[in-house]
Image (cartoon, rainbow, N blue to C red):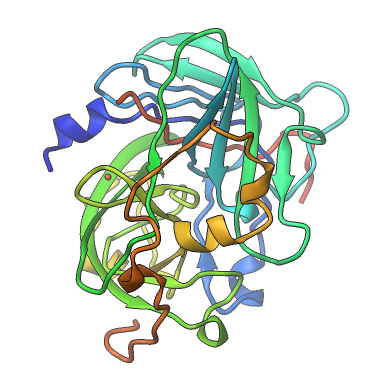
Amino acid sequence: MSRKIHFACLLNLLLLVATYCFGCQSQNKYFPQAGNYSQPTVYTNTTEVSNTPQIKGIGKIGSGVVIAKDGDEYYVLTARHVVNIKPGEKSDPYKIYFSDGKNYKEEYEFDYYTDVYRSESSSIDLVLIRFKSNKKHSFFTLNGNISRQESVTISGWKFCNKQPTYELTTGKIEAILTPSKSQDGHNINYSNPTIEGMSGSGVFNSKNELVAIHAAAKKFVQYDTEKCPKLDELHGDNLGVSVSSFIKSDLFNKLPKNSYKISSDLFNTQSNQITENNSKSSDNDKHVGIFLRPKSFKN
């Protein structure tokens, strides 16, 4: 899958959202990958470069994927920990900006209290975010069919030179974990390199269908955000939440009927067999987003 083709398929969203991960690496078994960010802006690319919105706020960044459309309302799926801090009450409302990669073209707001949907029955590391737009944006097809050694692509944003930088990495599914071996629904293990800022990124199969949401790294690896070297295998061995798990959760029921697309082989028998693997532990006009913590949050 070429980078150009994949970019043409993306409407990458960068959302202004609250992200609290200071200390989370020491408290959790795995390492959420919301990255540091110092500028209060959000943007989204609307060209083949990758349609990606950016959000105002100071703190952490993350990524997301547009998966549904209901009239002028769109729904973004991302990791729950990307938006787990409430925004300030004064001057830092959540906003989404769309960019052509150079200039901001569109701007949208969403309400943290009414437009962010969480599971009410589990701790699954996923949320839905709703925003309104009178522009026509397409969205990814959902597919829960995943198998070991399947090639997948991750498309998201990393923190680089004090700003979000688009990143696309390739790899393979290494393991599909049982519930007892997963934390917060992190049941898909893959070799794709990822880094801070890529939490909430989409994990795509060869058909550009969404099969999982990237959520965490199994180990912490230091990264030079000034030189921004190419991600290598040292940044591999990462975890995500499968689309299959999302569809089985109560969160999926919050999507309006007929607002999303599901692949015909979504519940292929092979994909529904969540099996543990003891091997290595240690990719339309689509949407991948960046999320920033509101500036009112104080450490």
